[in-house]
Image (cartoon, rainbow, N blue to C red; front, side):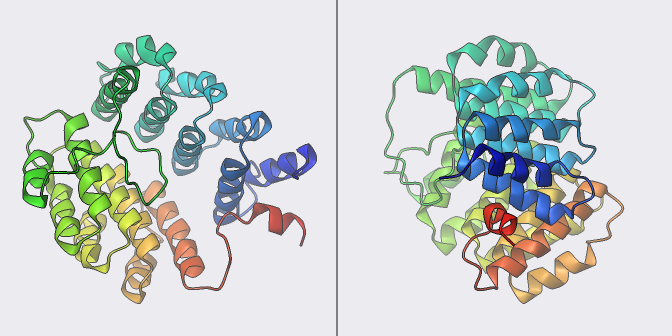
Length: 300
């Protein structure tokens, strides 16, 4: 049983700018795993921070918690045009993950946002909410237990059929995402290599989601493709950030070498992502029981 005082103490670590970012991230994911109103409150305090990466992850975690009590703060973040595009995008995606019909008017408003990543995210989130409202069921064989921006496509489709939808810019992003998550759930090298082709798409939002999925898969065959996008200084920083975190999840020696080279990148969000990814590499190559170790650290 976790006490309210313990939750507040973990929140204090999360919201303490003097603590190393990697400690704050571990505190965040501890709060996500604990859930509840107080955890949401502590996470929400972090949106006053000056780290776009941290705020992005705050929004991601609130979406994964799927608690409608988080909709108020997520709506404020989406509506706040002074927030970085990657933060507003993640707030919209989190609202779609929670999936309540009450958010439809807000998403409808911002699907025409001048920031293309925000507009595209709101469109996908709308499609997800409407899909949920339709009562459709899908056999979601998701081995990653993540709340995805779309359900997977029909399981009967082959890799080639899914790839054709996935790479077709004439399809809606929602349907392309559906094909991508079906390819992910196959977990074959052929499917992974098909997914890597999406890193050349014209949509930064799409490329960012591709990198996230490759991080979930943790397949070394995707390293050269993630490395190429991370090293491209003209690439959208939201994409470079996600490529760094994916390399951190794969956590081979090659990944550590790549991330170490970009841990002092001039783009703050890329630099911080590499620092967090290196911490993930350390965790993946250690006997540690869990990454979200905020409770354990309180007892040290």
